Structure formats: structure tokens, C-alpha cells
Image (cartoon, rainbow, N blue to C red; front, side, top):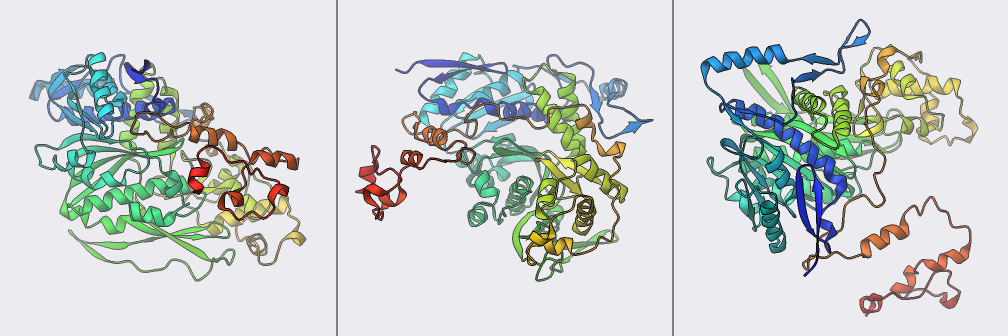
Length: 586
């Protein structure tokens, strides 16, 4: 029998088979901490309506963190909520008595939680140990070994009274819970790869106003490498672009809303984040035939210029208010001509994507306040505070973003500092913000013409050698036009966001070597070292340029594998077959 390793995260101590490293990825601790923080605030809102008040260990007086408001030049970062809460609690206390729910205790009026793909059960065990106000947690996995491990970990952490292990197909578990009384209040799906096979069941099995927590790790598909695969999974064509990470968020939100609309349901995104190698969305699901009619007008097609990267959105539907009623009609378009007005190149067509806000700022502020007021609750509290602070600063009504160094590299000129570029947009009368999804993002309501005018003005003081530019290149066509806007690059005080001024942890460096997604689990419970060996072999291959041709002998000859190499012994690549290769060739 394999030896077991104990891994501690949060308040949980999880037993792992030493031979199966795939069950635990420490980089995902941020994901699990953020999920605990979000569900806590969701439970606080939901259970207050049921007469239940939750208690969080270490939580003191609630504060609301407001990063965007300034008074006389000083930031009003923290505002106490204590008097308002006390008054509210007294008023509510007069009407009815509240039940107090503590961590680790079963609450009969509490939330029912399902983790559809639980693996070792770490996430569910942490829910049981760290979240108050829970009635039950179902930790499901299709693997018999995983289900047995979940049951052992539940017993090891003394949470068997709340957490039940299940060994079934996740979709069937959710399909059987479609009845109003059987639905789950919270459904968490964190699959290996794409969650698309489970989304149809999930939008039906979550309760009215319930919470869906979805993770996608198939970023190669969602970020534009395989647009046709993305369409088959999510009903949207992804595009290779600088804003691909936010587009991935909007693709999964589009897919969720589209599948929910089939059952007269709709989504309300609470928080959507792109971090590390995955994206994570938290959405509330509600039912309403009238609201579902708005679904088409919430989606948009995307036109992306392949030359300069300028993009335009085309809404799928149109709605107009007529008194108490709404009139719906087909949208008109397209918003672009046959070629890009800035560089003359063609457009790519992507989407449809979710074109509405991807966060509920009021809810995010509550999560941020709770994490800031109780920093010892999570080990990744600093990073959660930094990411959520950036989320609150984002322009909510502006989909997607441009990347500053891409704008300057398009015309082959030096890159202005972020403060200079943001100041120029503010001087021109436009709004601008950063994005949590990309370090050098520029999210603004300024049209692409204004952005290129600012770049043209910058180029005049940092000239490009025009004689080296091809007449058909985007750089030549953009710079050949005179700017209609005279940009001012004098740095403004409000150009520097508060999260940057406070030096919050917004974008962390790689935490460790080979820190990305782990290999898929195998039937025997073990993992193959082949994936890790390949990663180490090709790690940084573009940075370490080969100068000596003899070094090529360490790389296998692809043509020799296929039997088409004609160089024989003179080939500069290796003709040695590794174990298992001969069987494949046969």
C-alpha cells in the first residue's frame, strides 16, 4: 500500500497518496481562498433573509474599502459600517429573532453545497471547517479511489456530519437535483480542462438566486489558439488578441447565460477573474421570462483588426423602452467597413461574447472589506486584496482593453510610461482604468482613433525611421495621418490608481518552477512523468539560443520518426529512438 502525505491548507489537513501528486496543486490555494471569501459573503446575504446570522472567527467591525473616492486629496480608504449595522440589526431584531451559525456546525436553515469534481475533497473540507451557515456539502467524484479518499479526509477532519462523499457522474447528480426542493444553493465546478459538459446541468440544479462557481483551465482554447474548438464547447469563436484573457471571461459568461436562457433563467455575474493559468467566475442564477428577453442585447460579436488590433463590438440584439414596456428588434450593423479605417488591414470576426459588466461592484466591495478586515483568515489575503482592489477600479461599462506596449510596437516607437498615457487620455476628457487581467492594459471609453492620435503625438517627440517602414504596413499608414488631437502628457494626480499607490500585490511573479496545470489523473491513481520531462526539456527554449550545431543532437529528428528523413548519419538531429517510440512507429 502506498504511503500517505498530509498536506495542510487553511484549517484542513488532507491525506494524499504519495504516488499521486496530481490531486494537489499549491498554486490553486488562491482559487480556494477566494472561493471561501466569496461564499462567505454570499451566505451572509442569503441567510440574513432566512433569519440566520453567521459568525466568522477573527472578524471584527466591518469596514468598507473605497479606493476610488478622494476627499481634499486624501483617500478615504476605510469607512466604518458599525453604527449602520448596529441600527440595522436592532431594527431586524425587533421584527424577528436571529439564529447564530458558527463554523463547523450544521445549520438546518443553511446552504446546501455541491462540489461536482472534488478529487481529494480539499475544497469541500475547507468549506466545512471555514464557512459558517452550511446545512450540507456533497463532495462528488466519478473515481472510486477519489470518493474513498474524500470520505477518509472528511473523517480525518471531523466534518462527516456536514460533508458526504459521493461517487457518481457529476452531470447526473445535478440533473437529478433539478426539482425546486432538491436544488443546491452553491455549485462549485473546478474540472481538469473545460467545464462545458457540466454547464447545462449546473444552470438547472442551482437554486433561485443561487451561486455558480466555475473554473476554466483550457486557456489555449479560450485565448484563440483553437477558435473552432472554442465554438464547439462554448458557442463562441475565440480570437488571438492582447485582450484574450478578458475575452475568455466573457466567453464563459456568454455560454452560461445562453444555456440558462433555455430554461427561462439568466445570470448576474458577481465576480470574474483571470489569474495564473485559469479563469474563475462567480455568477448568481435567477429565473424570469421577461428578463431572459434581454439576453440577445447582452451579447455582442467582435470585429478585430489583424493589423493594428483595433476592435469594435456589435450587439446581437436591440431593445428600446416604450413606457412600461420594452420593444425588442434585430441589431443593425456592421460597425466597421471592409477594411480597418486606421491601418487598412482586414478584420477577424469573433464571439459572441458577454458585453455587460462582468462584476457586481457592491458585492466585490463586501468581499474586499471582509478580507481586509480579517487578514489572518487566508494565507493569500494580500493577493486577494490586490486583485479585488483592481477589480473595483475597472471601468465596468467598457468591454475589453488595449495593451500599451502593443500600441507602441505597432508603430515601432518607444513606449510611453503608463502614467503618461493615462494622463493624456484624462486630459482629453476620457475615462481610463487598468485591468486585473493584464499588467499593461488600457481600458478606456476613448475610441481607437483617439488612442492612435495620442501615439502619433508621442511619436513626434520619439521619432521612428520612416524610411524603414513598408508603405503597406500598419505603422506607415497610421503615422502618415496627422493627429486631430493634440495630446498632453503632463502627469495628472488621478492618473495613478489607488491600488498602485498603495503598492498592493496585484500581479505576482511565478511562484515556482513548473507551476501550471498538473497532469491529468490516470486510472491507477498515478501520474506519468513524461509531461514534466517535456516541460523541463523545452523550458525557456526561446531564451537559450543554440549557437553550436552539435547541441542539436540532443533533440529528436521529427522527419526520422515519420520515416521521411533523407540525411541519414549526416542529419544534425538525433536519430536515437526512446523507449516506446518503436512501438508507436510499428
